Amino acid sequence: MTLLPRRPPAYWLRLLAFLLLLTPIGFWLFSVAGLVTAVTIPLQHPVCCDSPTRFGAPFEKVSFRTAEGLTLRGWYIPPQNGAVIILLHPYYGDRMGVLRPAEMLYQHGYGILMYDQRASGESEGKIRSLGWLDIPDVKEAVNFVVTRQKDIRIGISGCSSGGAIALGGAAFSPKIGAVAADAPSPLSWDENRPDFQADPFHALTFTTYFHIVALQAGAYAPISTLEAIRTVSPRPILFISTGQGAEKARVQSYYEAAAGPKIHFNLPSSSHCAAPHTHPAEYEQALVEFFDTYLK
Image (cartoon, rainbow, N blue to C red; front, side, top):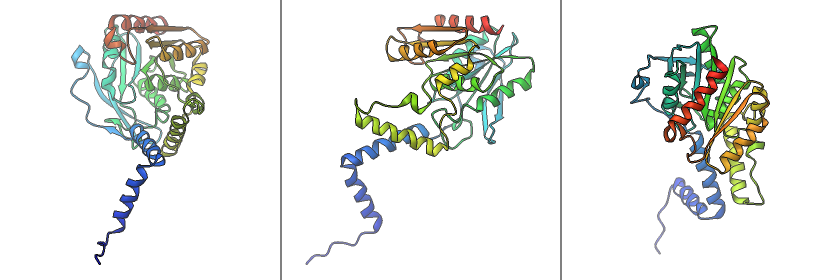
């Protein structure tokens, strides 16, 4: 009789895990784990190989601390017109993602603070959190700008999660006088709640993933996107959207929730966060006219 070779416990655990993946439950667990990893894993790296030097802007490499003591790093361009715009990059990126809007604003005299959010680019942090933990950091970015010039006027702009962080940060930072939110994403669970009747598998997967991210981050969003809009009002808000589908409809609903001076600018032939590149002239005009009207 031939005896089966003895295997270490780790072998049987790996085999069990493999067999589990072949089941619907295993596939579901794999899907949840993949989503959680994709949105929380740090994306830290040296920021290169471009800078505001490309469009002739004098800039400094700067850093400031979060309330917990993390160091966030970025670039600062001094203003020529008495106003600074804080630029927030989309979720999967770093400050390089806002170089094009920075160039547009710089050409019209605006100062710029662009920085890498937590666990992105050259900034410290062990987890990304769908923008939730980045919202309080906006207040520290504002404090940094004020230390450079006390009577400075401050605006803020971002796309996707950057747009949501801009709105959330402005809600807690009254020194921010105007907000440009390009396709801001929904922040809270109520705004993200999936439809279990339409697609039970997706709904269960998304629900589990969303709350695991919150467990790992140690917090949910401190404010919903809608609550942020209502809190920012009556300060002016520029809402930007692209296409003719779900993004435009969502941004239109945000526009309707704002009480103060507000604009909804839509570029139907562009795509998510691509407008500064696909329609630079139109985007620049909308952005600069908005901040010129409400900050200068």
